[in-house]
Length: 143
Image (cartoon, rainbow, N blue to C red; front, side, top):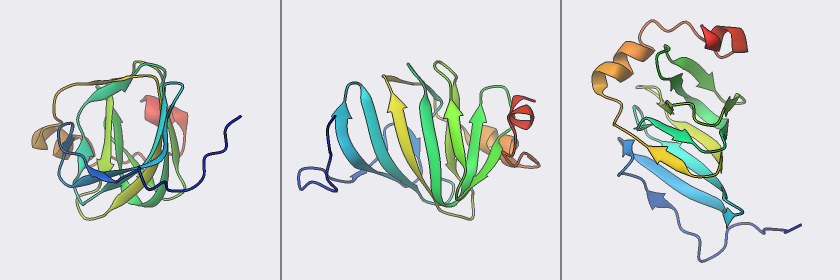
């Protein structure tokens, strides 16, 4: 067991831009440990990840604001404060803020991340416009 105390001086928030669109900040909650990373991620309105997948999966827990999560081939599902999302290993997806809101989530990533192409404006707007998904059930997300 390892007890990791709050923010260490050596740990710094960083602007994420190589694999994100818009203004996105990552703030480590703990140093990488046993191939697990844990970060607070702050998305400005419309900010989002590129398409990506995780070797052993990822947990997102939304702490503030609202936004979207989408797996490849499906419409986006709305997420808001209090929601938790499990992304299984290898599932290609993206997540980010709504156009008119901030989104803050804790991201717990297991294993490596494979980054892919940017989510285009057309993909973002096409995936989020008219999406009725509210993230309330696995069945809705699976449609």
